[in-house]
Length: 439
Ligand code: PXG
Image 1 (cartoon, helix red, strand yellow):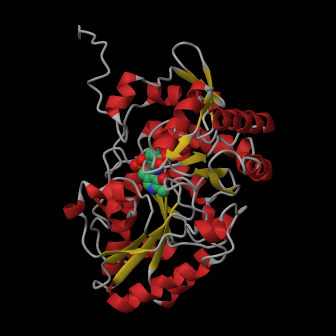
Image 2 (tube, rainbow, N blue to C red):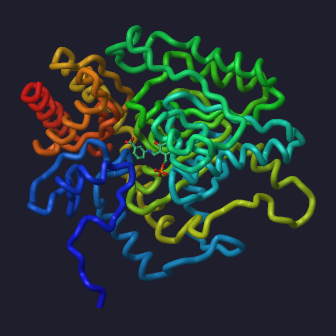
């Protein structure tokens, strides 16, 4: 028998101040609906859907049942050269809710893998269609695209890049971020100012020549950087510039997909259709790791139109379309449809918006922003100590029975789509009390 150690030391926790956490751990033991429960039985209202992923609420009985049934039926089936029926069924289910022209999906196990897959598909596509000089990739400052080498290279969060600075993939440029705090503070929905920031793409293209550029990748709304909603008209303009120069546009929809914005994807919410779309998180409502990359028909057909019987794309994962993930995904998508959760997100969004904006004027608040069921409150940093106030606020919120997400001195909200008005009021009033008590 393996000897049981009681320490917290063995587990090197991701994106966590391990030494701080291990002195004062915040542990969860179970979850249900809108709540987590701690080992000592405290109820914590989850206003981030775990980590922006549990869109159907926690431990949904239909999803749990599907996972249990599948685990007993078939544990694993390879996707390289073999298949299982449900993987094809779920692909049909998913491509029924993507934009009309995106009818093909490549399965991964996470958002990071989805991003690296999307970048590789973009590069391979340019070669396949006879444009091998198109190798450059363009991301954006403050973008988060996971932690693979591709993702951190196109990503724009300085701390995520600093430790690995000499090992990025080459040939990457970044658009400026769109967070214009002075001009757009307290915007409800799409901010008024900043469409011209999209024109910076033209400058980058002039510098390198468009014939050397493969793809542009952005989050429709930047999540990790603190819910940065795109300026009105910005995404459409990016699309126009990409079209003009025959460059692929990739939307990283790992957070914005599956109802978060009150529509299937941000592409539909904003009526801007990319060429490639990455997803994960809400794909299975966070229940089993899974990611998916959707591509336009022309991209898939470019690979399929070549004569011969060779493998068309030299890429894939042992666990692409893992039976457990597929079962969880099918059940999740069925729950979304049966319970009308994307529509529900759209209906709750104005109530969420009003509640969040009622925090204007509370201590140290400098901005509030939102779209769909994504929202953020930004705070003035403690003098010379950026990030400290944010960390204090999540700890105090947790002690008060509320889970929120922090990035720097911004607190983000991204609740399960099942939430009710009473949860919104509970969350905002708890948070208000925390702000007033810890001024
Ligand atoms: N793209 C986007 C837009 C994401 O938000 C990833 C890719 C990577 O997904 P994986 O599954 O590899 O983690 C993400 C992930 C946060 C936070 O609150 C956000 C994410 C992950 C962890 C924390 O800042 N987003």
